[in-house]
Image 1: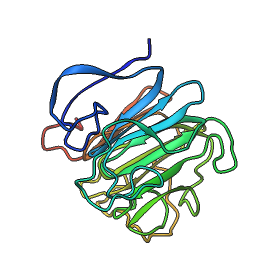
Image 2: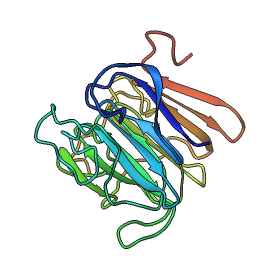
Image 3: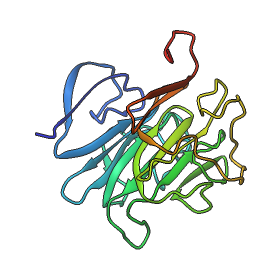
Image 4: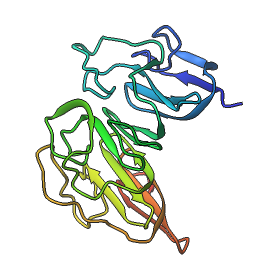
Length: 231
């Protein structure tokens, strides 16, 4: 029935329940939801026949498109439109957001990646100010078109293209970018990002670790392993 139910921490109103109270029992917060994702302080859904992008929570870091809250105490307690429609995929990181349109408009191109929010670790995949509330794919450090999947976590992001190329970028303190070293990205970086795989089929990011499968059904994991999460 495409209803959305939510529960848990709600300090920033990110559960879209009209308050900031902790919610211990699942409660319906949306209908006709096509996709959704949760960040640290914000949440997003794709809703309705127009595939409208809605957000709830705080946007101190510009993680809600076109919105920069002046305080971390600002709370948006209900899902609200930011004027963006025609969206096919949405991902919320700790303090950043990524989405992929499924139709072309004056502002956005179908199948391309757009990012906004905090970029201190280069998790937007493009050079920008540390905070950038305006969704863009200008100067992306890789070819951000023909996107099949996205995955977004606390401070790193992944884009899987339809040809199997996989790009992972952002914080790399624990090797979660899969580059064979712990050197990560920064908001001012302009150098090209190389694909870490050319035969990827699925990708999923954890808080400080990452995983992908290949077209041959092999599984690769990397990053923080204190709890054996990559073995």
